[in-house]
Image (cartoon, rainbow, N blue to C red):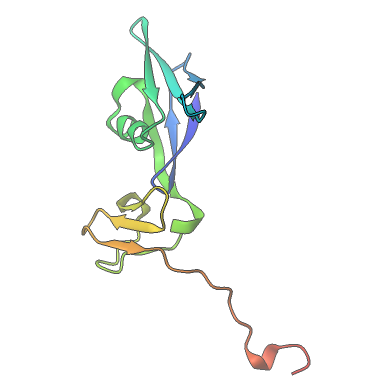
Length: 134
């Protein structure tokens, strides 16, 4: 089984042993809010190991190290917001070194430690000489 997992602005493809399944669960708190508790359930040595989906960076870290029977397939692919971004501090543009902070537009470069905001994408402007009627 292969799963595609999102963490830190990147998509990871994770190879899992036969018999792995995704377990989705939820819990309602006293304030009425529902929280999700998703896990990847991996069979290992006659038992099952539950790998939580939170924090999101845990599964890619375990897969990169080859622990618990899961392994990383290929390189991470950038989310659209990270595609083409480079660090203003060192110029690093390899997505494996860039981490998109959860819930923000802030990026951290692991290569040099710089924190920076994502550039604002603007639509390409049509030169005045190419506009219709002009």
